[in-house]
Length: 264
Image (cartoon, rainbow, N blue to C red):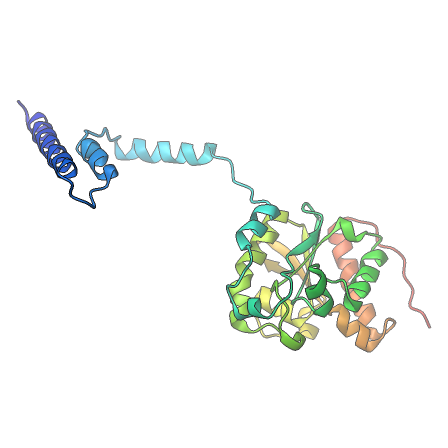
């Protein structure tokens, strides 16, 4: 008998002894002996055939190549988020505001967080800032249902304050999963909080806007928040700065650029 056969014989004998011992303990009424342990003992020393290192590596590579990438749906992400209480915002919100729009949108708008109207209705950008965003979308000759709209955090910060760093850190993984699910061709970050959170920078929005940045391989255009446009006026310099940013977005999407002229 060679060494391999001897080793296998010893393993088989030990397995049989261990299995019998565990079964005796169970029959004698001893508690805490899981049935799975008895079953696993029966298979513990079963001989395993191992491939050569190079062959194993090749098989693993082939298996990975043949396995399609799993696509996570927005519904699955929302279900996983559940009645979220992962940060302190969960205790003060009325409704969790997940996102709305086309799950296969080419363009995604990301704001900083829900306001009072959004908290009440459970939908992003439905208040006055939402009306301004709708105006921007319409100016691009798109419809709200063509795009996807969400926020960095899913719950309203008290008194509409900017989201705090721990709140952003807790919620950002879900935002990233949303964006990876939609897989847009362009992301527009609305306002400094959203842009700084996504790009992990403290550079002010006035210096970030006007050019594309990379976000996990997706082009991201920071621009002013619609609420800022409400404060400065719909025909202000800031409004036309946003329009200049949207022109770049349209061109990247290879969509027609509507001819807009500033009102005097």
